[in-house]
Length: 370
Image 1: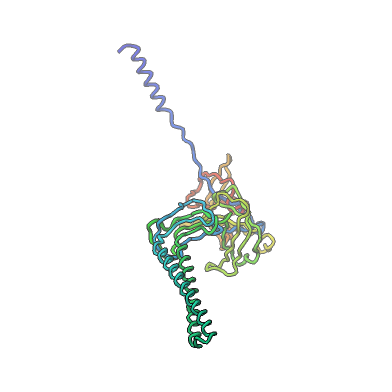
Image 2: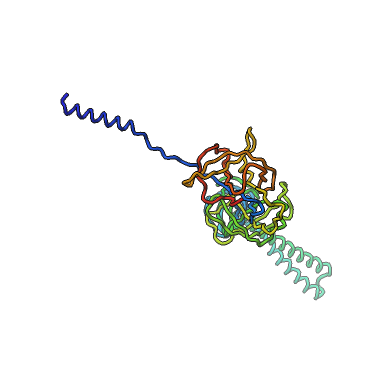
């Protein structure tokens, strides 16, 4: 082995040793968490209720007659105009019935015409004393009967025409197709859902409000809507429906229609509706710390929350802290010990946090200040 080759081998060995000594650079990833700032209940100007986004009209469209679907003209996500045909049934039997009704109507019309003409002839004969009173009565009865039969046949023909039109499923207004419930070659019965559509210019939010606050909500009230899908945005909505009877859970349903443009909001998304109740807070609420129920964890050691302590560089340390609480309302639990005013606590994924974990906060608390 010559000298040059020895030098090359030694250089390669030293390079490999240097690479082995250099450790790979690891980038630390921090879990983002939702949070609220704890403030006394009396200082709040809003109460927030969790609900769901619904379409202005959410309907399962169905045929009014039974049959086999032979055509489907839409797919999920399609936007359709009012009157657009969505699906079609095999209408062979309905078409036959319709044609039979038309033939029966034509026969009834002809029969009415003949009986009416005969009645006119009998009238002329009776006036010339060439026909008896009984013949006149019989002719008149036959004409009246033929007229009634024609009316019945006409109604039956109209009904058969309507039945034939029911073989086409049409959009009731401008809508979007949300779900296909029955497809081509499937036999469906009258009233069975075939296509689910969501309609309306903008969505609405439906929430449940406890009885002690429902009297403060009126139709036309403005409210703020926030969703987890758009945590950096808020939408304006107006109350359109206020329940007058409690549901099985003891709460009252309230619906609010979003105003203006609401791109991206879709039926089924979770949402929070905030109402301003600052005028109805009383002194008994003072210094009560109310937090969302989902922020409280429980295990063999008892109830706890994770308090978020700032450690700089937009980072926070999750500190597990034991708490005691009593049920406050549908909106949250009243903390009696464990946390103080102004602290930040995690509101979601509590079971996935551990004491001392370093985390980052979402830019805006989804539930606002609590």
